[in-house]
Amino acid sequence: AAFAEEVHADVVVFEHLSRNFRGSEKTAQWRKMEVFHKTCGMLHRIGIRYATVSPKYTSRLAFDGSGRVKRGHEISENTPYDVCQFKSGKIYNCDLNASYNIGARYLMRLLKSTLVETEWSRVTAKVPDAAKRTKITLSVYRQALAVCSAPEE
Image (cartoon, rainbow, N blue to C red; front, side, top):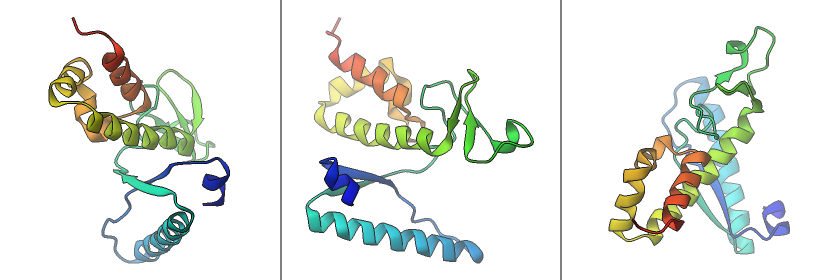
């Protein structure tokens, strides 16, 4: 929250983590939700909004639109799990890749809310992945933005 205030953020976007877990996963989920609620409380006190997006495939899909990434041992035996490799061969941190996609999902939701239905239909016709919320990556958002700013034909 202090960092968000320092950089004058308007909103902080989180993955929505309220799935049902069992056994040992329950404790980890409980701690994550505790951190989430504490952070949201701090953000509320300083006047910064928060939003959540679906966590599905945020770190599994490459932000550049190249598709599914390889993680950790899928790359090589000694590679840590927090590293991913895109189909193009680029190596990234999985959390950085996911944060781009989380931000893109939030921005796509904002974009959709500002468009009339006919304009949104034009966007989804030219960028089909824009209609599928779990397939939205940074590259899909950029393509949708380009369609919106392009004059109608």
